[in-house]
Image (cartoon, rainbow, N blue to C red; front, side):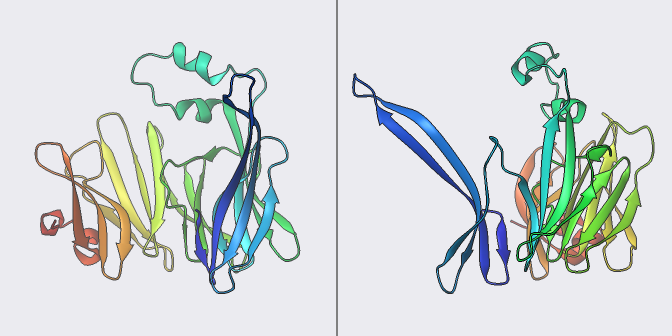
Length: 256
């Protein structure tokens, strides 16, 4: 399930075909995947794209008839993921493999006409995010090199919002509440900002000297975020916080 837009739900549908072996066991003999839209009013399901080569493009976001997809390819000579993992020291993040050996393409597609527009091509240094909040309304967020952008699916235009300092070991980003939350730092430090999509204004969020954000917003509703708050012992607890207190870094106002 990818999300809702203009009365339709967008999802991946999988079909698995099995056969019975001579000893009565089930054996998987085929898999098919397709991206579909489901009209919540009429109940009509429409196939948008079918898996033709073992992978489906990842749906970044959808706004009416415009969809943003992400595809990737593995660079030539890359080791198998299992072999790479076996050679890494303990604690190596698994997504480091993708940062080293994947090339990404981000593109928009018009569901009515089939027209496509490349947003980020394979030659650019696309920085993948582990956060699921990649779209909000008509906007999707993405990063190339050290710069974070938003792409407007309605106007088909991109805008640079923020550029990270050089020398940081990690980056991450997400989009919620009309703001792009950008995170960067080193093994020992973390800094975070909320950047307004409309006017580009930047609010630095207090990380309280830690190496992670003090409050990670997972969900939002009118006036509030729900997420994980880091307490004084370094543990995390599920809390709610008003958006006003969040942008003020007033995490002590969070409640359960």
